[in-house]
Image 1 (tube, rainbow, N blue to C red):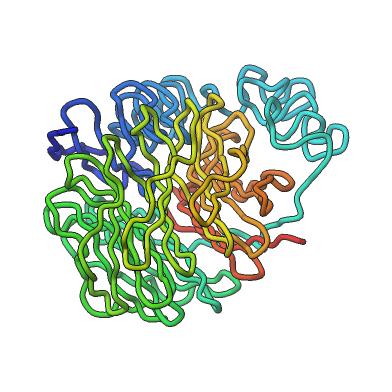
Image 2: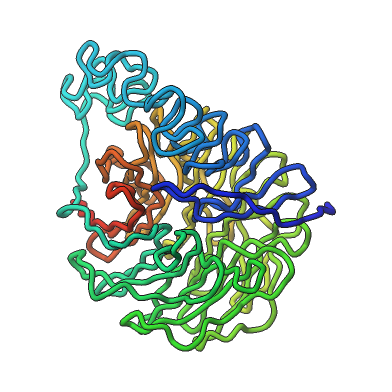
Length: 520
C-alpha cells in the first residue's frame, strides 16, 4: 500500500472546549488521520461516514469548532452531537436543534411522561415507563435508561464514590487527557495543558501528586518547555520514580519523547527523543518491566500506520533500534502495552480486514515480536481503542464497539499465549454512546471506566467485571454535572480505585479526580 502522506493544517476554533491537536495527516486524498482529541487521536475521517470510531460527519472529532461535532451527525462514538445536538459545528450548545438530538435528555417523550424522568423512553431519555422507583430496583422494571437500560427489576451496586470530585487543576488554560498512576503511597497524574500559550493553542505536559485521600499535593509541575505541541502523556511508576512518554512536535515532525521524574515529580535531566523518523509517531503506551521501560506507539514512517516498539533504559537512554511490530496493508493504531513478568503483550486496533478490529501480539523482553498478529474481534462493527491488562495468568482487554448499532464497551479474555478465550462480552447496554474504556485488574476481578452520553452529555461511568469477564452489578455513574466529562484514567491501589478525567464543569477544561470503594 503505497500512500502519499503529507501534513495539512486544520484550523480549530477555541471556545471553552478545545481540540487538543490542530493537524492531520492527509493520505492520498482518501481519508484523514485526525489526531484531534487526546487519547482518541488517530481515528479516521472518511469524509462523511462513521469514520473509524471517534470521528463523525465530515470533520472528525472537533470538526471546525466544537469538541465532538462535525456538521453531519452524532460525531462518532461518544461525541456530543451533530447538527441538532449539543455541539453542532460551533460550540457547546450550538447545532440548529437544541440540546437533545436523538440521545438527549427527553427525546420524544418529554421530561416526565408517564412516570419516569423521560416519559415512555423518549428516543434516548433517562428512564422507561417504570421511572426511578418502579418495582424494586434503581430503575424499576425498565432500567435506568428505559429501553436497553442498565438496571433490571432489582439490583444495585456495592461500589460508591468516596467523598466529592476533587478538582486537580485550576488555571486559564485547557487541561486534558490525564494519565494516572498509583505509587503505593499516593497518586501521580500527568496531563496536557495550554496555560503557557497566550492563544491557548500550544500545550505542554504537566504533572501533579495527589494524596492517598485525593487531595492535590504541592503545585502543578511543568515537565516540557518546547515550541510545539506536547501531548498524549503515558505515565508509569517504577517503585522509586516516574517514567513519562509523550508525543512532541518540537522537531517539526511528530516524535515520541521521554523523561524521568523524581518521586516528587521533578524532571530528571533533559527530555529524550525516542524516535527519529520522517513519519508521524504518536499515541505512546509506556510500561515499566522492573528493570527498564518499554514503549509502543503508532508510526507512519512506512507510508502506512504501523505499531512500533522500543526499549528504554532506567536512565532514559533508547536501547537498540525501533522495532516494527505490525506489517500489513491496514492502519494499525492505538497500542496498549503491558508487561506480564516475562514478556510484553500489546493490543491495538487495525483495519486490515476491511473494518477496524482488535488485534494482539506478544513481544519478547528483548523487543522481538513473537508468533503472529492475533485477531481478537471478528464482527461487522468497528472495534477500537483497546485497554489491555495482565492478571498474573492471562490478559484482559476492553474496547468500544458499534456492532449493536451504537458504541458499547466490550471485553474479552486472552490467554498468556495470546489466544482469545471464550466470546466477546458486552459490558454496557444503553441508548448512549459508551466509549474510551480504561481497564484495571484488582487481583480478583476487573474494574472498567468509560465515557458515556446516555444522560444527554458525556459522563464518567464505572463497572466491576468478574475474572471470567461477566459484568457485575449495575453501571455506576461517577460524574453528575451538566458539562462534558471524558477520558477517564483508572487505577487500583490494592484497596480502592482512583480515577482521573478531564471535565468542563468550570467553563474551562480541568483535570478532576475521585476515589471509588467497592464492598466484596
